[in-house]
Structures are given as C-alpha cells and as structure tokens.
Amino acid sequence: MPPTLQAVDFFCGAGGMTNGLLQAGIDVVAGVDNHLPCSQTYQHKTNNVRPNGTPSQFLHKDINSLTADKLLELTQLKRRDDNLVLVGCSPCQFWSKVNTDKNKSAQGKRLLDHFRDLVLDILPAYVVVENVPGLSTRAEDSGLDEFRNSLRTAALPYRISEGVVSVAFHGVPQKRRRYTLIATRLPGEVSLPEATVATGAWPEDMAVKNFLGCSNGFAPIPAGHKDPTGFHHSSAILHPQNLERIKLTEKNGGKRSAWRNNAELMIPAYVGKDEDFPDVYGRMSWDEPAPTITTKFNSLSNGRFGHPEEDRAISLREGATLQTFPKDYSFVGGQLEIARQIGNAVPPELARRIGHQLLTHWTANQH
Image (tube, rainbow, N blue to C red):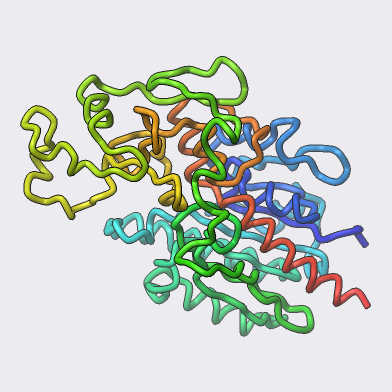
C-alpha cells in the first residue's frame, strides 16, 4: 500500500490542483490535458514534485478518446484502488454566467460525461470535481445530475458532499465562488473544507494589500515592463489612450466613471451605461479581495484588473500570487499563454484544503 493517497488530475492545465494536492501530502501521479503548451509548466522540475522526488507526469491526452485501460497502463495504477483519487476540473467557461454558446456547453457536458465513464470503470476511492457554480445551477444541462446519479448507483456506490464555496473564506484572495464535489465509496462521508471565520463581508487577511505591493516583494513597474527573470513580474503594454484612462482612474478601487465625461477617452459602448460591466477598466482595492482572476487578468480592458496604485494592469506574477501559486512556481510560455495558464488554474490553496479533507477521511479508514 502506498504511504499516502495517489491521484490523477484530469484537465490539469498548469497544475493548480496538482500543486495543492501535493502540498496537502497526496501523491499526484499524473495530470491529463490536451493543451500541450501547459506541459512544460506542469512538468517543470521544481513545480510539482512527488514524494519520490520526480515531477508529476503530464499526459498529453484528450479525455474524449482516453480509455481506462490506457490510463492505467500509463500510470501503473489499478481499478478499485482504495488509495486512489480521480480529479476532474473540466474547462469552466462553458458554464460561466456570461457564456451562452450552446455548442460549447455541449462540449463541456461531453467532457464531464467522459470523466464519469472513466470513474465508473476505474472506481477510485475518491472523486473530486471543482468548477464554476453554473455547473450546479444548470445541473440537468451540464450533465451534473447524471454524473451524481451515476456515482450513487455505481457498482461500488459513492456518497457525495457538495456545495458552492466563496474562495476568500478558503485562503484565496478573490471574490470568487466555486462549486466543489467530493465523493467517496469508503465508509463515512468526506466533508467540504470549513470556511474561515470572518466578522465582515470578507476575511481581513484576504485583502489585496496582504499579497501585492512592495511589502510583499513586488517592486513598482510601468506598463509594458518585461521581467527578464523567472519571477514573471511582467505587465502588458498599454495603448496611450488606455494609459491616460488608468491615470485618471482613482487609485484604490476607482472605476471608469472617472473619465466618463472625457470625449477622447470615453468608450462609445458605455456612454450613459456606467453600471454595465462596471468593473471594466477599474482598479483593484487594497482593502478587499481581488476579483476573479480570469485568463485575461493582465489586460486592463477585461475587468477590474488595474493595479490599485500603479498605472498598469497587474503583472503575471501578481495574478499568480492572487491565485495562490507559490512565488517560486515557474511558468513557461509567452505572456498570453502564461496568463491563460494562471487564469484557468484551480487555486492551489483551495486544492490543498480539499486534499486535507481527503487525507483526513482516508487516514480514519486505515484503522
């Protein structure tokens, strides 16, 4: 028997879930993803190191054509293993609030269906799903209803714990909500991670000021700065017009309404519509968690991604830090690719807390 749980991380991307589970003490044998550019980040020699000292293996596979037999052959794992976790964090854009593309929604359902088929064939001890709340609120369309029913009626039935969590109460400094499901076929239930206690709207220690700024290792930089080191404190170039916009935006949480009466800067689509997508072109606030870090977090025009004080969008490393990646986590690729990897990732700290719940339950079943 292995000294700890072992896991396979489907839709692993750059390794956010993998890294968090490893931090918790779970041996992540492999990650599976069909986006090859993630592989160099995922398998970087210092990023996701297993207990045996080797990096978790990146399997460049499409889950739509991956069979259980092939997966088990590649990972040397086995069916009905009481020490195995299968994690499926499929791409979430299909079920986000702003996405209405029926074709992409159908693609997203197929991904969950194929993950379900692998689970029912392999029957691991634990199953984890992490996704946007829309996966749950649109459960019939997303395939979640069928997924849960299949787990409950499997050859070895599973008990399910699930819910939508606000990640700021789970160690992640973002105003972000995520659907989490943990299922087990071992005795007892696995509870979701407990939220931290807070007296206000947000935990005080999750404010941006506790993660960004000079006191947290981020030297001031201008827009367009290219960090020549592996720290990736690089910021996107700003068009002169956007540079003027952010200069006029009030520091520490300002909105684009600051320049709504400037004919040269105002965006025609937002004239008279200050409340439509109010975060666009805004600055983060030092005293609150960040907004959800998306794949375009380094772009001023795609959300409230302006630095609270400096005249630029946040840097790649700042985005990774708000996602709770370790500061020595290495990313490989150009700025757009790295931003995509960071924005698509499961926050490692949330993953670590999920991993802790799994290990607590698994350890209790060893006696």
